[in-house]
Image 1: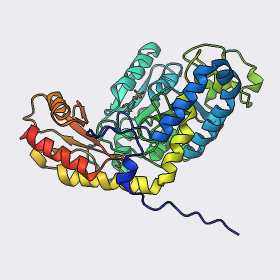
Image 2: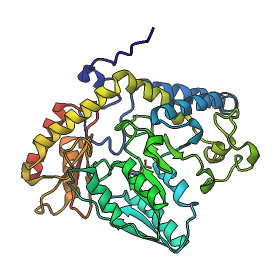
Image 3: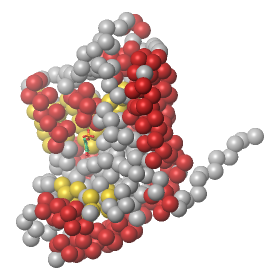
Length: 403
Ligand SMILES: Cc1ncc(COP(=O)(O)O)c(C=O)c1O
Protein backbone atom coordinates (compact mmCIF):
# COMPACT_ATOMS: atom_id res chain seq x y z
CA UNK A 1 0.00 0.00 0.00
CA UNK A 2 1.36 3.45 -0.95
CA UNK A 3 2.17 5.68 2.01
CA UNK A 4 0.36 8.98 1.73
CA UNK A 5 2.43 11.99 2.65
CA UNK A 6 0.34 14.66 4.31
CA UNK A 7 2.02 18.08 4.22
CA UNK A 8 2.00 19.87 7.60
CA UNK A 9 -0.96 22.24 7.95
CA UNK A 10 -0.23 25.95 8.13
CA UNK A 11 1.41 26.71 11.48
CA UNK A 12 0.28 29.41 13.88
CA UNK A 13 3.04 31.84 12.87
CA UNK A 14 2.65 33.91 16.01
CA UNK A 15 3.37 30.82 18.11
CA UNK A 16 6.22 29.71 15.86
CA UNK A 17 7.89 33.08 16.40
CA UNK A 18 8.49 32.00 20.00
CA UNK A 19 10.30 28.89 18.83
CA UNK A 20 13.24 30.94 17.56
CA UNK A 21 15.64 33.02 19.65
CA UNK A 22 14.19 36.33 18.54
CA UNK A 23 14.53 39.10 21.12
CA UNK A 24 11.24 40.60 22.24
CA UNK A 25 11.03 44.26 21.43
CA UNK A 26 13.19 43.89 18.33
CA UNK A 27 11.95 44.25 14.77
CA UNK A 28 14.33 41.95 12.94
CA UNK A 29 14.17 42.45 9.19
CA UNK A 30 17.69 41.30 8.39
CA UNK A 31 17.71 37.54 7.83
CA UNK A 32 19.58 38.51 4.66
CA UNK A 33 22.58 39.00 6.95
CA UNK A 34 21.95 36.32 9.60
CA UNK A 35 19.03 34.07 10.43
CA UNK A 36 17.63 33.62 13.92
CA UNK A 37 18.35 30.14 15.22
CA UNK A 38 15.51 27.95 16.54
CA UNK A 39 15.63 27.25 20.26
CA UNK A 40 15.83 23.50 19.67
CA UNK A 41 18.79 23.95 17.30
CA UNK A 42 20.54 26.24 19.77
CA UNK A 43 19.98 23.69 22.57
CA UNK A 44 21.38 20.92 20.41
CA UNK A 45 24.49 22.83 19.33
CA UNK A 46 25.07 23.87 22.94
CA UNK A 47 24.72 20.26 24.12
CA UNK A 48 27.19 19.12 21.46
CA UNK A 49 29.65 21.87 22.42
CA UNK A 50 29.43 20.73 26.02
CA UNK A 51 30.17 17.15 24.97
CA UNK A 52 33.02 18.31 22.77
CA UNK A 53 34.62 20.44 25.45
CA UNK A 54 34.28 17.74 28.12
CA UNK A 55 36.26 15.22 26.05
CA UNK A 56 37.44 16.73 22.75
CA UNK A 57 39.48 13.68 21.80
CA UNK A 58 36.56 11.30 22.07
CA UNK A 59 34.20 13.74 20.37
CA UNK A 60 36.43 14.82 17.51
CA UNK A 61 38.37 11.64 16.84
CA UNK A 62 35.92 8.86 17.61
CA UNK A 63 32.34 10.10 17.48
CA UNK A 64 32.44 13.12 15.17
CA UNK A 65 32.76 11.17 11.92
CA UNK A 66 29.43 9.43 12.21
CA UNK A 67 27.63 12.69 13.04
CA UNK A 68 29.35 14.50 10.19
CA UNK A 69 28.36 11.76 7.74
CA UNK A 70 24.74 12.07 8.86
CA UNK A 71 24.83 15.86 8.49
CA UNK A 72 26.29 15.55 5.00
CA UNK A 73 23.66 13.05 3.86
CA UNK A 74 20.89 15.27 5.21
CA UNK A 75 22.30 18.33 3.43
CA UNK A 76 22.73 16.38 0.18
CA UNK A 77 19.11 15.30 0.39
CA UNK A 78 18.03 18.93 0.84
CA UNK A 79 20.16 20.15 -2.07
CA UNK A 80 19.44 17.36 -4.53
CA UNK A 81 23.05 16.26 -5.04
CA UNK A 82 25.28 13.35 -4.01
CA UNK A 83 26.75 13.65 -0.49
CA UNK A 84 30.13 12.76 -2.00
CA UNK A 85 30.23 16.19 -3.71
CA UNK A 86 29.67 18.38 -0.63
CA UNK A 87 32.40 20.04 1.39
CA UNK A 88 31.39 21.73 4.63
CA UNK A 89 32.82 25.23 5.07
CA UNK A 90 32.46 27.98 7.67
CA UNK A 91 30.51 30.17 5.27
CA UNK A 92 30.04 31.04 1.62
CA UNK A 93 33.07 33.35 1.62
CA UNK A 94 35.31 30.36 2.33
CA UNK A 95 33.44 28.29 -0.24
CA UNK A 96 33.98 30.90 -2.97
CA UNK A 97 37.65 31.34 -2.03
CA UNK A 98 38.07 27.57 -2.29
CA UNK A 99 37.12 27.89 -5.94
CA UNK A 100 38.46 31.29 -6.96
CA UNK A 101 41.94 30.91 -5.48
CA UNK A 102 43.07 27.57 -6.99
CA UNK A 103 40.94 27.36 -10.16
CA UNK A 104 43.22 27.68 -13.19
CA UNK A 105 41.91 28.75 -16.59
CA UNK A 106 43.67 29.78 -19.77
CA UNK A 107 45.12 33.32 -19.70
CA UNK A 108 44.58 35.83 -21.11
CA UNK A 109 40.88 35.49 -20.51
CA UNK A 110 37.86 36.93 -18.73
CA UNK A 111 35.67 36.20 -15.76
CA UNK A 112 32.10 37.30 -16.41
CA UNK A 113 30.08 38.38 -13.38
CA UNK A 114 27.06 40.53 -12.65
CA UNK A 115 27.23 44.12 -11.44
CA UNK A 116 25.32 43.09 -8.27
CA UNK A 117 27.84 40.74 -6.69
CA UNK A 118 28.59 40.85 -2.98
CA UNK A 119 31.72 43.01 -2.74
CA UNK A 120 33.73 40.63 -0.53
CA UNK A 121 33.26 37.83 -3.05
CA UNK A 122 34.02 40.13 -5.96
CA UNK A 123 37.35 40.88 -4.25
CA UNK A 124 38.25 37.16 -4.33
CA UNK A 125 37.69 37.15 -8.09
CA UNK A 126 39.68 40.38 -8.44
CA UNK A 127 42.62 38.75 -6.69
CA UNK A 128 42.28 35.57 -8.76
CA UNK A 129 42.20 37.68 -11.94
CA UNK A 130 45.29 39.67 -10.92
CA UNK A 131 47.22 36.52 -10.12
CA UNK A 132 46.37 34.76 -13.36
CA UNK A 133 46.42 37.62 -15.84
CA UNK A 134 42.62 37.61 -16.33
CA UNK A 135 40.12 40.46 -16.60
CA UNK A 136 36.74 40.89 -14.99
CA UNK A 137 33.84 41.79 -17.25
CA UNK A 138 30.51 42.87 -15.81
CA UNK A 139 27.04 42.08 -17.09
CA UNK A 140 24.75 44.96 -16.24
CA UNK A 141 21.55 43.43 -14.89
CA UNK A 142 18.09 44.91 -15.46
CA UNK A 143 16.70 46.06 -12.11
CA UNK A 144 13.04 45.25 -12.72
CA UNK A 145 12.93 42.58 -15.42
CA UNK A 146 9.65 40.82 -16.06
CA UNK A 147 11.16 37.57 -17.35
CA UNK A 148 14.26 35.43 -16.66
CA UNK A 149 15.19 35.73 -20.34
CA UNK A 150 16.07 39.40 -19.84
CA UNK A 151 18.65 38.35 -17.26
CA UNK A 152 20.07 35.59 -19.45
CA UNK A 153 20.32 38.10 -22.31
CA UNK A 154 22.25 40.55 -20.10
CA UNK A 155 24.92 37.89 -19.49
CA UNK A 156 24.84 36.54 -23.06
CA UNK A 157 25.59 40.06 -24.40
CA UNK A 158 28.88 40.11 -22.49
CA UNK A 159 30.09 36.62 -23.39
CA UNK A 160 33.28 36.68 -25.44
CA UNK A 161 35.46 33.95 -26.96
CA UNK A 162 37.91 34.72 -24.12
CA UNK A 163 35.32 34.26 -21.32
CA UNK A 164 36.55 31.43 -19.10
CA UNK A 165 34.30 31.61 -16.02
CA UNK A 166 30.70 32.69 -15.40
CA UNK A 167 30.04 33.76 -11.81
CA UNK A 168 26.77 35.03 -10.35
CA UNK A 169 24.65 35.08 -7.19
CA UNK A 170 21.56 32.91 -7.15
CA UNK A 171 19.77 35.57 -5.05
CA UNK A 172 21.19 39.10 -5.31
CA UNK A 173 22.29 40.61 -2.00
CA UNK A 174 21.21 44.05 -3.23
CA UNK A 175 17.60 43.59 -4.34
CA UNK A 176 16.82 39.95 -3.57
CA UNK A 177 16.21 39.26 -7.26
CA UNK A 178 16.35 35.51 -7.95
CA UNK A 179 18.50 34.69 -10.98
CA UNK A 180 17.57 31.86 -13.39
CA UNK A 181 20.44 29.63 -12.30
CA UNK A 182 19.69 26.67 -14.55
CA UNK A 183 19.35 28.80 -17.67
CA UNK A 184 22.57 30.65 -16.89
CA UNK A 185 24.43 27.38 -16.35
CA UNK A 186 23.08 26.15 -19.71
CA UNK A 187 24.56 29.29 -21.24
CA UNK A 188 27.93 28.58 -19.58
CA UNK A 189 27.90 24.96 -20.70
CA UNK A 190 27.12 25.92 -24.30
CA UNK A 191 30.04 28.37 -24.18
CA UNK A 192 32.31 25.67 -22.72
CA UNK A 193 33.16 27.71 -19.62
CA UNK A 194 33.15 27.06 -15.87
CA UNK A 195 30.04 28.10 -13.90
CA UNK A 196 30.30 29.20 -10.26
CA UNK A 197 27.31 30.24 -8.14
CA UNK A 198 27.19 32.20 -4.90
CA UNK A 199 24.05 30.78 -3.33
CA UNK A 200 24.45 32.67 -0.02
CA UNK A 201 20.70 33.24 0.41
CA UNK A 202 19.26 30.23 -1.37
CA UNK A 203 19.08 27.36 1.17
CA UNK A 204 15.89 27.87 3.18
CA UNK A 205 14.57 30.41 0.68
CA UNK A 206 14.43 28.39 -2.56
CA UNK A 207 13.82 24.73 -3.34
CA UNK A 208 17.21 23.63 -4.58
CA UNK A 209 18.22 20.88 -6.95
CA UNK A 210 21.91 21.41 -7.62
CA UNK A 211 22.16 18.49 -10.01
CA UNK A 212 19.40 19.96 -12.15
CA UNK A 213 20.91 23.47 -12.03
CA UNK A 214 23.98 21.89 -13.59
CA UNK A 215 26.61 24.29 -12.20
CA UNK A 216 30.24 23.35 -11.73
CA UNK A 217 30.52 24.89 -8.25
CA UNK A 218 27.88 26.16 -5.83
CA UNK A 219 28.68 27.67 -2.43
CA UNK A 220 26.18 28.86 0.16
CA UNK A 221 25.48 29.85 3.72
CA UNK A 222 23.34 27.76 6.02
CA UNK A 223 23.32 30.46 8.69
CA UNK A 224 20.98 32.79 6.83
CA UNK A 225 17.60 31.42 5.67
CA UNK A 226 18.20 27.83 6.79
CA UNK A 227 18.69 29.07 10.38
CA UNK A 228 21.75 26.97 11.24
CA UNK A 229 24.27 28.58 13.61
CA UNK A 230 26.97 30.88 12.23
CA UNK A 231 29.79 28.58 11.13
CA UNK A 232 27.77 26.44 8.71
CA UNK A 233 28.24 26.74 4.95
CA UNK A 234 29.16 24.43 2.09
CA UNK A 235 30.68 24.07 -1.34
CA UNK A 236 29.18 21.72 -3.92
CA UNK A 237 31.56 20.44 -6.60
CA UNK A 238 30.13 18.85 -9.73
CA UNK A 239 31.37 15.29 -10.34
CA UNK A 240 34.44 15.52 -12.52
CA UNK A 241 35.53 18.94 -11.21
CA UNK A 242 37.20 17.67 -8.02
CA UNK A 243 40.74 18.14 -9.31
CA UNK A 244 40.16 21.78 -10.24
CA UNK A 245 40.29 22.97 -6.62
CA UNK A 246 42.70 22.65 -3.71
CA UNK A 247 42.40 23.20 0.06
CA UNK A 248 43.24 26.73 1.23
CA UNK A 249 44.67 25.41 4.47
CA UNK A 250 47.00 22.44 4.37
CA UNK A 251 46.71 20.10 7.32
CA UNK A 252 46.54 16.38 8.17
CA UNK A 253 44.15 15.70 5.34
CA UNK A 254 46.73 16.74 2.73
CA UNK A 255 48.33 13.35 2.11
CA UNK A 256 46.02 10.56 1.15
CA UNK A 257 45.97 7.61 -1.17
CA UNK A 258 44.78 9.23 -4.42
CA UNK A 259 43.53 5.86 -5.67
CA UNK A 260 41.06 5.84 -2.75
CA UNK A 261 40.27 9.58 -2.80
CA UNK A 262 36.50 9.13 -2.92
CA UNK A 263 36.02 6.14 -0.63
CA UNK A 264 34.05 6.74 2.55
CA UNK A 265 36.16 6.67 5.70
CA UNK A 266 35.58 6.93 9.46
CA UNK A 267 35.68 10.74 9.31
CA UNK A 268 32.22 11.10 7.81
CA UNK A 269 33.25 11.60 4.18
CA UNK A 270 36.05 10.76 1.76
CA UNK A 271 39.76 11.60 2.06
CA UNK A 272 39.19 14.21 -0.68
CA UNK A 273 36.48 15.90 1.44
CA UNK A 274 38.61 15.68 4.57
CA UNK A 275 41.49 17.41 2.81
CA UNK A 276 39.25 20.53 2.69
CA UNK A 277 37.35 20.16 5.95
CA UNK A 278 40.20 19.35 8.31
CA UNK A 279 42.03 22.64 8.62
CA UNK A 280 43.49 22.05 12.08
CA UNK A 281 41.50 21.80 15.33
CA UNK A 282 38.11 23.42 14.97
CA UNK A 283 34.55 23.54 16.24
CA UNK A 284 32.50 21.39 13.89
CA UNK A 285 29.26 21.63 15.86
CA UNK A 286 27.57 24.16 13.49
CA UNK A 287 27.91 21.51 10.74
CA UNK A 288 26.62 18.74 12.96
CA UNK A 289 23.32 20.48 13.74
CA UNK A 290 22.39 21.08 10.09
CA UNK A 291 19.97 18.10 10.32
CA UNK A 292 18.33 19.75 13.35
CA UNK A 293 17.87 23.02 11.45
CA UNK A 294 16.45 21.11 8.47
CA UNK A 295 14.09 19.11 10.73
CA UNK A 296 12.81 22.27 12.35
CA UNK A 297 11.95 23.83 8.99
CA UNK A 298 10.65 20.62 7.46
CA UNK A 299 8.24 20.19 10.36
CA UNK A 300 6.85 23.65 9.65
CA UNK A 301 6.47 22.54 6.01
CA UNK A 302 8.54 23.95 3.16
CA UNK A 303 5.44 24.99 1.25
CA UNK A 304 4.10 26.81 4.31
CA UNK A 305 7.40 28.61 4.80
CA UNK A 306 7.67 29.66 1.19
CA UNK A 307 4.04 30.79 1.10
CA UNK A 308 4.61 32.83 4.27
CA UNK A 309 7.74 34.42 2.79
CA UNK A 310 5.76 35.41 -0.30
CA UNK A 311 2.87 36.70 1.75
CA UNK A 312 5.13 38.95 3.83
CA UNK A 313 7.11 40.16 0.81
CA UNK A 314 3.87 41.04 -0.97
CA UNK A 315 2.66 42.90 2.09
CA UNK A 316 5.96 44.77 2.39
CA UNK A 317 5.64 45.82 -1.25
CA UNK A 318 2.09 47.07 -0.86
CA UNK A 319 2.99 49.07 2.26
CA UNK A 320 6.34 50.52 1.24
CA UNK A 321 6.42 51.05 -2.52
CA UNK A 322 5.89 54.77 -3.14
CA UNK A 323 5.85 55.64 0.57
CA UNK A 324 7.96 58.72 1.37
CA UNK A 325 9.51 58.48 -2.10
CA UNK A 326 10.68 54.85 -1.72
CA UNK A 327 10.77 53.02 -5.06
CA UNK A 328 10.52 49.24 -5.39
CA UNK A 329 13.76 47.74 -6.74
CA UNK A 330 12.80 44.05 -6.70
CA UNK A 331 10.83 42.38 -9.50
CA UNK A 332 7.32 41.31 -8.53
CA UNK A 333 7.23 38.10 -10.60
CA UNK A 334 7.25 35.04 -8.27
CA UNK A 335 9.92 33.50 -10.49
CA UNK A 336 12.28 36.42 -9.88
CA UNK A 337 11.76 37.21 -6.21
CA UNK A 338 10.99 35.61 -2.87
CA UNK A 339 11.78 36.81 0.63
CA UNK A 340 13.87 39.95 0.11
CA UNK A 341 12.40 43.19 -1.22
CA UNK A 342 14.42 46.35 -1.66
CA UNK A 343 13.43 49.99 -2.07
CA UNK A 344 15.45 52.82 -3.54
CA UNK A 345 15.70 55.79 -1.25
CA UNK A 346 14.68 59.13 -2.73
CA UNK A 347 17.56 61.31 -4.00
CA UNK A 348 16.78 63.83 -1.28
CA UNK A 349 18.30 61.52 1.35
CA UNK A 350 21.87 62.72 1.77
CA UNK A 351 23.08 60.09 4.22
CA UNK A 352 21.45 56.64 3.79
CA UNK A 353 23.44 55.12 6.63
CA UNK A 354 22.01 57.76 8.98
CA UNK A 355 18.56 56.41 8.06
CA UNK A 356 19.65 52.91 9.01
CA UNK A 357 21.12 54.20 12.29
CA UNK A 358 17.93 56.10 13.09
CA UNK A 359 15.80 53.01 12.43
CA UNK A 360 17.93 51.07 14.88
CA UNK A 361 18.55 53.67 17.53
CA UNK A 362 15.07 55.17 17.65
CA UNK A 363 12.89 52.21 16.70
CA UNK A 364 14.96 49.04 17.36
CA UNK A 365 14.52 48.01 13.74
CA UNK A 366 17.34 45.83 12.45
CA UNK A 367 17.46 46.28 8.70
CA UNK A 368 20.13 46.61 6.02
CA UNK A 369 20.92 49.64 3.88
CA UNK A 370 22.90 48.66 0.78
CA UNK A 371 25.01 51.18 -1.10
CA UNK A 372 24.95 50.33 -4.80
CA UNK A 373 25.24 52.16 -8.10
CA UNK A 374 21.47 51.80 -8.67
CA UNK A 375 21.11 53.98 -5.56
CA UNK A 376 20.92 53.42 -1.80
CA UNK A 377 18.64 50.45 -1.12
CA UNK A 378 16.59 49.75 1.99
CA UNK A 379 16.62 45.94 2.04
CA UNK A 380 13.72 44.25 3.81
CA UNK A 381 14.20 40.55 4.60
CA UNK A 382 11.09 38.74 5.75
CA UNK A 383 11.31 35.16 7.03
CA UNK A 384 8.39 33.21 8.48
CA UNK A 385 9.10 34.55 11.98
CA UNK A 386 8.39 38.09 10.89
CA UNK A 387 4.92 39.46 11.36
CA UNK A 388 2.51 41.99 9.95
CA UNK A 389 3.24 43.98 13.10
CA UNK A 390 6.96 44.16 12.17
CA UNK A 391 6.00 45.71 8.84
CA UNK A 392 3.61 48.16 10.55
CA UNK A 393 6.47 49.24 12.80
CA UNK A 394 8.73 49.72 9.79
CA UNK A 395 6.11 51.78 7.98
CA UNK A 396 5.64 54.06 10.99
CA UNK A 397 9.39 54.47 11.44
CA UNK A 398 9.95 55.16 7.73
CA UNK A 399 7.24 57.84 7.88
CA UNK A 400 8.95 59.48 10.85
CA UNK A 401 12.53 59.21 9.59
CA UNK A 402 12.02 60.09 5.92
CA UNK A 403 9.26 62.69 6.11
C1 LIG B 1 25.37 37.23 -1.92
C2 LIG B 1 26.29 37.10 -0.73
N1 LIG B 1 27.46 36.46 -0.89
C3 LIG B 1 28.30 36.30 0.13
C4 LIG B 1 28.01 36.76 1.39
C5 LIG B 1 29.00 36.56 2.49
O1 LIG B 1 28.49 35.75 3.53
P1 LIG B 1 29.46 35.28 4.68
O2 LIG B 1 30.10 36.50 5.24
O3 LIG B 1 28.58 34.58 5.66
O4 LIG B 1 30.47 34.36 4.06
C6 LIG B 1 26.81 37.42 1.61
C7 LIG B 1 26.47 37.95 2.94
O5 LIG B 1 25.52 38.64 3.17
C8 LIG B 1 25.93 37.61 0.51
O6 LIG B 1 24.76 38.26 0.65
